[in-house]
Figure 1 (cartoon, rainbow, N blue to C red):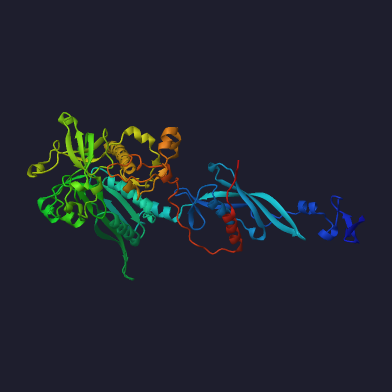
Figure 2 (figure 1 turned 135 degrees about the horizontal axis):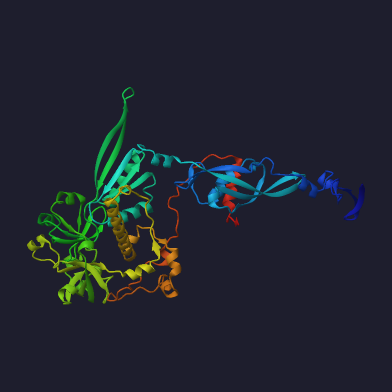
Length: 555
């Protein structure tokens, strides 16, 4: 049945013809559709998802938690990166326009990933149709190439053995944070932890060389190289070697007491025999507790006199001192040669500290210290009491201080207010599979190592120079437990005018870690993805992912 309606265009009247739809009997204008079916029936009778795959498989490595893109990419569930991988598994998306994409919540144990897609396509004569459907992907477990090499014996081609024969792990904790910050361990196959250090295993010799070169720029090291023949082909004259780099660190660590031989003291410019190590870089930095002058000891000089140098660590020989008074040493009271010394890095921090100790019946003693910006009256300092140490070489030394202050003691209750945390390397303990008495000893060493790591966190919290080379992350669990007063202390104060009076010391809390200085808990194992050729459909998917600001999750 055909009906005619009049349509007025300006002063002219043009007839408009309408017909009834052959399916729903609704009147419509056939000149617009050029069919015998109305727009609603066209949409109901047409499926634009035909030709688009609704199911797919995503390869997943359960050991390193990476998905195959390719290459293997580390991404979390319901992330934009995983959405990009899933969309590239679908065929037929190049013929439609993607309007929206979102994850439908599924349990991780179900090994299923569901994506809700909304697409649009022109069906007939400028008629755009929009449709929503769900695609389901199955997580297929498959080992990546790196994990295959890790679990297969005789796959590593080079190893770096880092050793330091001391009773504590302070240097290795600092080295661990440097490797994580600058991603110097990205090519490593696995890391094993031994009693005296760490073992790094690599596929090729060049990767191990890169780690050794990096270690030589941050620590004083001695390197020895060895190789072992694994196999060779006599016909083609090809040899397969395994290379091992033995990296030895000196037995001196930060805050250690060092007794130098007389001959070495003359080579260093007539310094005192009793020295304190305050920093460890490519050289060993020492400070004389009497004259407060600094000196540098190279690894070559240390190796030459290694058997004559005596080292005493702070953990075993520490004593507590109560600070009674702190008096700053002004530059006008020092001679010109001492002030002009370029090696005196602690000139603005020199103080005379009056302390008392329990072993001396609380008799006050005045000593020089380089901790003027840290110590305050009433605090407890940690250091060495040379009158209580049994050191035979001190009998031959005529002039040495009674006490040496090293750092300020941090109350263990203050650890509960710590708002930061550090990343750790995933190292395997090679002694875990032993049994009996060895297991009990290993448990004791592990507890001792945890306590040493807490002490390392104390040093990081109060040492502003050390924090420059370490990534600090927010500990959200501890931040939520803080009350309003403690949380206010952890926030930065407004910028104030700098103090011009040299007699005034800075506030003790100014160098503390603030919330604004911390990073969010990121995944440091992310690796840059290689560029790969894509077709028109993949380019359209990539453009859609970049425009997608937020991925919604429907539960």
